[in-house]
Image (cartoon, rainbow, N blue to C red; front, side, top):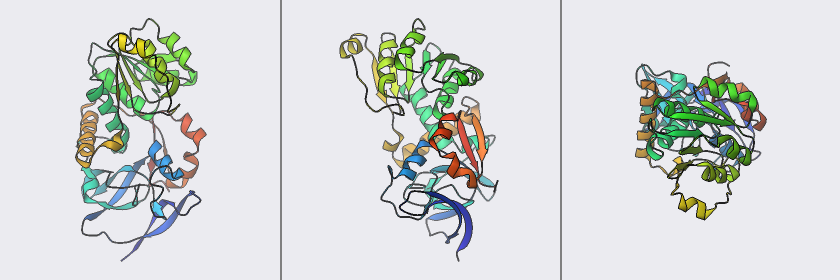
Length: 317
């Protein structure tokens, strides 16, 4: 028997998000019903809304690729298996999801933080621990340090004992970087970045920006340094001085979570939850919004102003 639930839905070809009461059918044999508590907002959600990802998926459907909810006495992260992409997602008071998309939240982990673990937390763990292999000996520059992954990666690098600087192009966000315990590099352009980082002795750069910032990162790194690129929010095209790059033995690595299979996704989420439980990772949450506030929250200007993450509290409406 179908029930009615409040959800944020992509309802037609106009790609407009509408918050409305919608009928939700019973779960199939491989599905479960979970009462959602919090959901995260990720760049991937905006790509889905714009039709750049999963544009061929049927509408109407509920968006939201990750979140945390309650089933019985237990809390679970919800992510993967097409949730929020090709099937209904987490921006809903209640969700019908595949059993395989549930990962139990350990005792002591804040559910608000857990709601960010699947995408933001998993990316930060992969980038800092597995690719850059950051240790106490490293001097790390985190580009876009006030973003969701940037804040999480900064906390992980600091917990590893490394010396860490966070870059921001907005002087008004410098205090946020300092609150995380990192030094601040204010650079609105790639050239400013090279100048600001001169003399810091950076041997690891974590880069979600791409474009000229990636070019600058290869210039400012010390010999034998490591560059990890995990985004291109500034630009997808970058120039490279090949001689300078190879003569200084720079190592460049890339990370894209979409390449991971179900088992890798689950292990990455589990690692992120463990880092949260151990206190090694923090994901600052700048605001909590209701489902009804979601359409306005997704406006580009609003997204650029966010520090850390914005959480959708599905019970606020």
